[in-house]
Amino acid sequence: MSNSDRDQRLAAKLRENLRRRKAQAKARTAPANESEQEEGTGTSRTLPTGKKDT
Image (cartoon, rainbow, N blue to C red; front, side, top):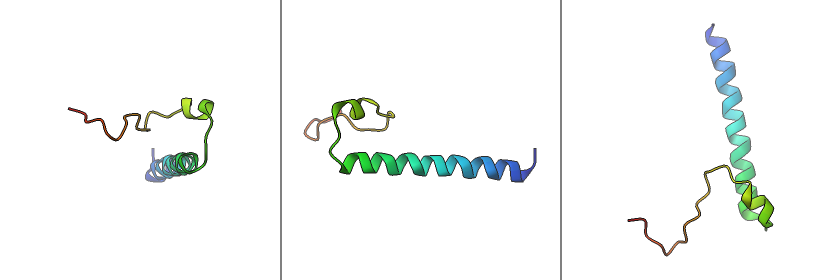
């Protein structure tokens, strides 16, 4: 395995990560229906802001 193979895989992962983050940001700013919200990727925060995690 050459360094260019590794670089290409890393670049592909970074592009996918950026695409996913852009989609998440767009979903947060746009009014979403419940089915879109249920598709979460595990990175969304579900706790209300007033609740303390202790």
